[in-house]
Amino acid sequence: MLAAALLAAPLLAILPAGAAHAGITDDVKSATLPNGIQVLVLENHKAPVATLNIFYKVGSRNERTGKTGLSHLLEHLMFRGTKKLKPEEFSNIIQENGGNDNAFTASDLTDYFEIINRDHFDVPISLEADRMANFAPKGFDSEKAVVMEERRMRTEDNPEDALGEMAAAQAYLAHPYHWPVIGWMNDVEGLTLEDALEHHRIYYTPKNALIVAVGDFDADRVLKEIRESFGAIKGGPKPPQPTEVEPPQEGERRAVLRHAANLPAFTEAFHVPNYQSPDAFALEVASDLLSGGQSSRLYRKLVIEKQMVVGIDANYDMTSFDPGLFTVAAQMRPGVKPEAAMAEVDKEIAALRDTPPGAEELQKAKNGEQASFVFGQDSILNEAMMIGTYQLLGDYRMVDKYLAGIDKVRPEDIQRVARTYLIDTNRTVGVLVPTGVLPHPEGGGGAHGPISHTAAIADIGEVSR
Image (cartoon, rainbow, N blue to C red; front, side):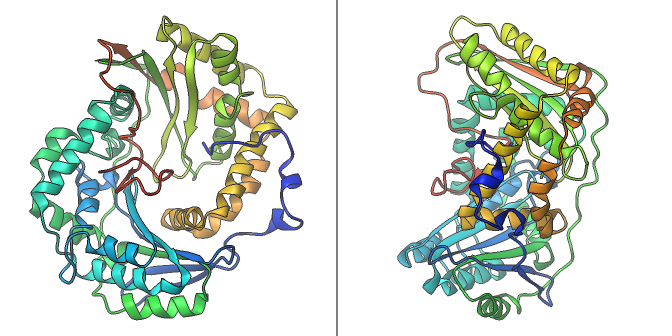
């Protein structure tokens, strides 16, 4: 779900005249280099900065049993030097030129990006071309140790993330979404440098790469620079993509995690389709109806009125490459049992199934989704990530269908998707039972979400080292 800050006013009231129909991809310039690299360039003159994103269509979805966490470990190794650069020298050069760099691994993709003054945009272009062509990591064992410690701190010592990991593993039996992005500890411990080099050879090819540049520059000049820097890199075959299909869930599944924790918690996960389904936009709006702001149904009932939970979130990501999960998660207040809070959640979901939302409530939820989408465009990095993600899904121009798709959602659509997907037989429930008090505050995890290389860009994902 796109977090909503603006809920009441119609979206058109907050947009400049004519902006409601302007597509952010209207001015995108695209090219495909002879070696297969796709390139998208967009001028954005709001500030004198630019971002370069190098996407590879590889994530934990492309791993196999026994080798989980390989994509994330490889992301770490990409900062450990090339044939020309020493470990961390890439980041040092970016910083010396006044920029920031980072990367994250997700289930479906890996993204390396730099944000820098427009006058130094040639620096990341040159550095990324070298990293693509001359990968030569050093210090494999020490970097693997960093990843293992990251897993300990961010998942095994974080009970809510450990619960989410367990619930996803129960929800997916056949599809690689079964395992977390960071991988299982035993698998990570057994990974070798040869594993990483082979993974790089298969998936880090020009035909599996996408370059997205957004910023205050001349698009034609930047396209020319990218062609000159990346065009001579040797091509290679297009890598295989996963073919596993998750079978329909035919009954509720439950998992109980006994873990040191300050408070009990629960998560409910329902199998749902992704962007390819006409139901995707209704599911997006349904997530906002349930937890988009303090006036949403679950927040109002469980946080404000009954004071049962510290916070609650309904989440849905329509841009997952394969069908994903619609989740509801909450942490209890002291003395409240998860079963009691889940009963209240079930009542609110049942209400969605029984009665279509009213026009005013539905419009408020739409406004929240649309406002978050529009205001997210204030960040050139967000723009680049949106464009890149949709291009990897099939066509970057799908970005411009988002606002209209949300606007078309009708009350009966919400009721239909609730009746179709948010049902007991399609649900996996995870419950966290505290076995003692944590010696440190909870927080900071996200083993199934994006895992970022550093904390420099806080809203991208989770800290990786």
